[in-house]
Image (cartoon, rainbow, N blue to C red; front, side, top):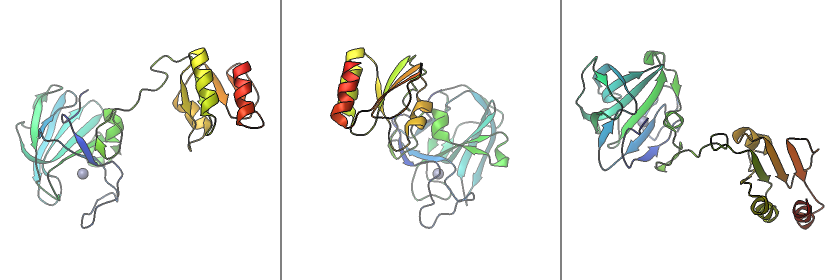
Length: 226
Ligand SMILES: [Zn+2]
């Protein structure tokens, strides 16, 4: 898997509301928009070109690449160098970024749908590519703890970072903050065999150890003395 453009910047994330004067069939942006000074567009994965056309009211010049269970749509192209039925290898150049169709400026509209594409079952293309679904230079999604083989993880509540940092460094255990998503969401996101929960009340289990004092200092002492 590669990204469809090199050194790309996302200008409109997936599920964004439409900009003024633009209509989306699904009521939200069903792809991601990206731009790059290099303008060349590459196949992120191998597949077959199953459609190639021109839609002046919408996608402009577009191609659709089928790969496994997914159909990838590349829209608003200035030009494309592929033909219907062509077998494409990952990394092959398939077109040039342009401003054809319903656009306010040159960009690539990249969309991923479960096949067949005409059923409009769009999926989050950023997630599919392994990048963050947000405006700005493309950044890769941080690998989950599972992928990094993390056995133990310190999770700390707001305000208890000092205690967490000391504990983390003393025991060589990575740490993450439980933000507004809440503790259980963080645990789900970062699977580990054992958690050290600093600043949370709860019952110790073989998988979870809680450190929570009357105040931050007491929490810190508890964590440090354990
Ligand atoms: Zn778009």
